[in-house]
Image 1: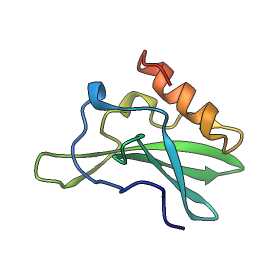
Image 2: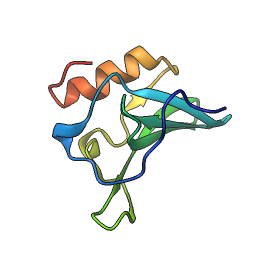
Image 3: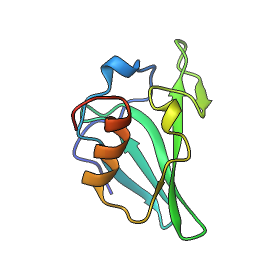
Length: 99
């Protein structure tokens, strides 16, 4: 499935996280999470019937930093369902940002 935006994989600071967040299915157990402008900030993984957010960041050279990035503090936040509005509201709300 091609997302309606151009995904990017680079360093994003918490102040640059633009909502609403976008969910892009990867497979039956993984959904990629991107900012409104396409920056990859993590994934949702189905673990034991619960969707868990896995934060992802990138350093200045573009190297992957699992468990890091602008949503580090929300790593392992759990969701009962894949609801884009709820995911965006909770993850961005934890940053004190509008969703």
